Length: 333
Image (cartoon, rainbow, N blue to C red):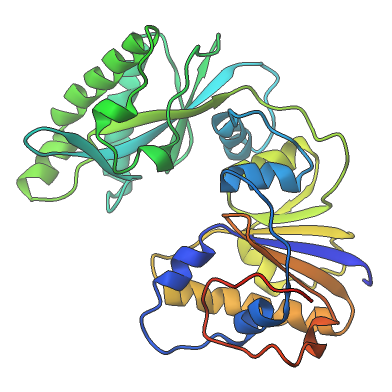
């Protein structure tokens, strides 16, 4: 297995680190950050980083929705539609503004989710738009023509005044109307009426974003095996005909039969930062052991593009002492 190169992408690494409140230590992660070498990439977002790891230089508009559809369908469709993510969100209003406070289904049970889905599907079908719901937590729609404007990404729109987040373009009036009609339908949806009466969070709108066509494969085969549950990475893996495995399999893998290039795209499986870091600590300990044996060299990237490279030479950097987890300071070898 000598010569195996492994990349570990942890998009939310530093937000998880910032959430630590106690004195808990994570020796393997601390060793990686203290003795590894900085290898940062300049990227505007974690999804741009994902494209870069596949050797693809993306346009400004990333086709997140198209790749999500490929991932959820588990194969690339033949039709060349323009895809949009259509994610359920929660809006909150004060006296003057309306904010998007969260996305996803929160604590809704499957029956409530199905009721919300059917409510939104009915509004879209009236406009001749079909809702694709292969995944229970997210939706996509397919259009025959591309949009002439761009919706803000979901992450950027969260916390914004809805009036500022919505696109200001003549063609966008159609989509503003659809969003309004969906909000009215959801306000009157029985599941939301029940939740409103109980003082619970409602799903009262959708957000369209991530528009684009399904991209072509990368010009070079850079990655052999991918462990990931992230829809963009999984979509890219399917398009590029990579061996694809679930994220949970990474903690049990020996990596011996995974080829010379491996990517693990780690996304949190819980809402608890310490618990998630403990899982990541176990994986990092395994990777450091393999690197110290000379079996692999590996890099860990945060979603910001900040990276640390670790190989068997790292342990010799005895002058670098472990410290509690924090954002590393760029240092030489």
